[in-house]
Length: 88
Image (cartoon, rainbow, N blue to C red; front, side):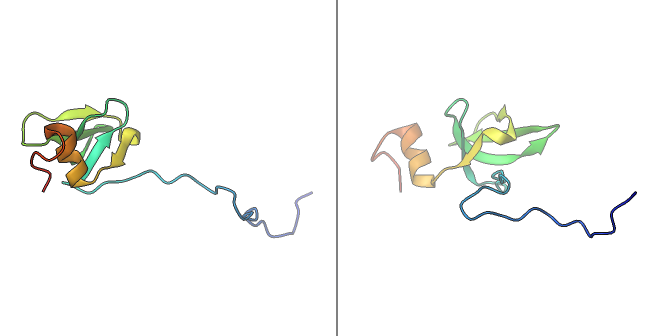
């Protein structure tokens, strides 16, 4: 016999994680690929792969979208050029 009670979502307990939210960068956001440490500008996602263009231009690298994390521009430049060499 079917229940007549209305189903509700489980209660959220303070301090517990409800759902993980994946970082979704916008085009030209500075990102880092956590799998390789590669830093560049996010170009987009095609066929399930995220594409990142390196600082200064060049060929894009691909990675899994779940590996992307935000990266500050100054930190990105320093990772490529070294501290104090164009991190403005």
